[in-house]
Image (cartoon, rainbow, N blue to C red; front, side, top):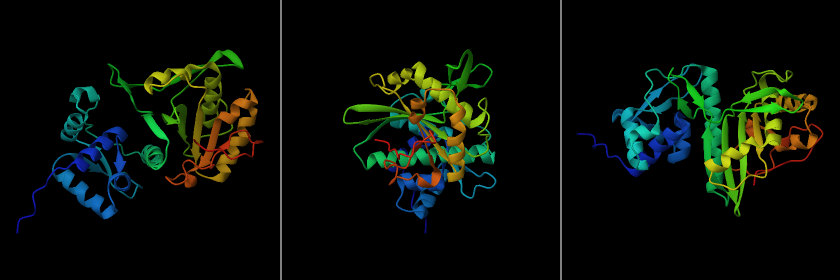
Amino acid sequence: MKEPQFKFVKRDSDLLVDLYKHKYLTISQIGRLHFPSLQTAYRRTRLLKQAGYINPFTVPNIDESIFGLTSKGLQTVAEALGIDKDELKWSESKTKPHDYYFMQHFIAINDFRIALRQACNNSDIKLLGFIPDYYGERTEKGGITKYIRDVTCDIANEREKVSHTPDGVFALQKDGKTALFFLEIDRGTETVSDADKGVLKATRFYLNYLLDGKYQRYSKDFNADLFKGFRTLFVTGSETRMQNIRQASAKLQVPEKAKKFIWITTDNKISTESMFKPIWKSIDHRDNSGYQIG
């Protein structure tokens, strides 16, 4: 008996568009986005692979398959979006990433994006867009000029500049008001005691970025009026790590009120159900208030 012929349906198209937007998705993330069960996700992605739309790969120490688009899949995305394939600024990589720490970080960013998107779908808060860190223009030498990388001057020393690339930038809208957010996924591998590197350098960047106003460039990206400010969201792996970051930030020479614009929480508190609950603390270690998005 012949197997039924593969039939491409709208859900497949939606899946490929999401794969384009997220660059790589694990099988469980695909399941969360598009299928009622993981078994159904496995079955459908197997058919899409056989039809040449997607390409799975594995990374050492990550116990599930990760998927990326093929050239055929990208052509389908272009048709779904009603644009030319070249406008997507994408090319199929001959090799897939196999660095565990890179992919673990990448997966964590997408976990947050998915939880945020689904939380918005279940609320009156609208997600206006999400710009990931890898978005940018390819240079003549083959590198990437990252779009969301920026530079600010340190108000404690105007001759010193602080550069940084966020893990993501997004905007939310509720009741006609728009808010800007920067995302930082902390893997727990960087120092928290040196203001010139790692977590404190990123924190220092945001505290000065808030004061110099360069973040207003994102009003065009999200088709919004000028922002009143922004929030930076740090997601880290443990309560101990979170408290260490909060304590370390005390040495940064910026107005104390600026520290309340940077929030932090642990990754086990992030979910679709909790996203808009008061799960955040400011990095001001003296501030015991709980904060919530929206």
